Length: 260
Image 1 (tube, rainbow, N blue to C red):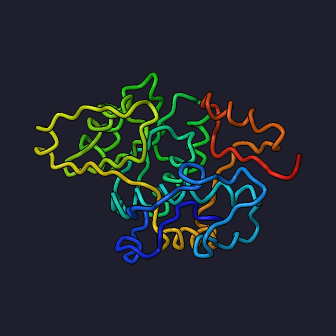
Image 2 (cartoon, rainbow, N blue to C red):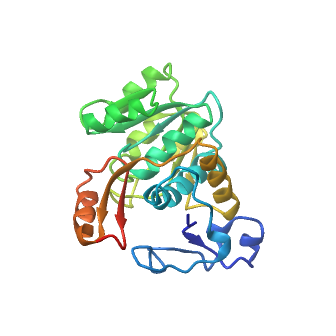
């Protein structure tokens, strides 16, 4: 498997195992050529053994989403056993990895989607509460589930469309952690609530070499495993991208290179 985040391995951030803050940090597929190719070159430190019994597709689907979710919940939000976490958009890879990690850490989990099928699958994966964010009042339902106190952590990579509701779901000293803004990058925050409830608003990107080694270890122990939506042969790669653009996927989409 490949850790897709590459730092210089020499700067102060890399030396302290905080590679995403390296000035030269690059992600395969964003800042460097990606893995939809016959050959990929990475530093040896970025390679991990494929867990026993896994397909190559699972190995391809695991790294980026799981590493991103791991850093969000552990290094940034410090999610602890017994706490409650809200995860928006459970159809995505990061959200599903966050659900697995939260369950591994012993947290209670609330997930959202506008798809009944995705919500049902989330329950099968261990979600304690699944909400339709298109038809239900998410903050109201979340607070009812959390005894009126709000949640300890919100995982929000949606941005503009969910930000205000995310804050309404937070309890006192709650932590909102984000790794993206798929619905838009501009949000507004009532600063009075920020300081009165003593919230933490946290950004997170990818993960370090040490964090990657930890999720690879957990994968090898059978404690983390990616959810695959569909695998497309290379000749049908465009169909895979269209499925992702439509938001129809439930888990990770994989494209096989070299098999058609």
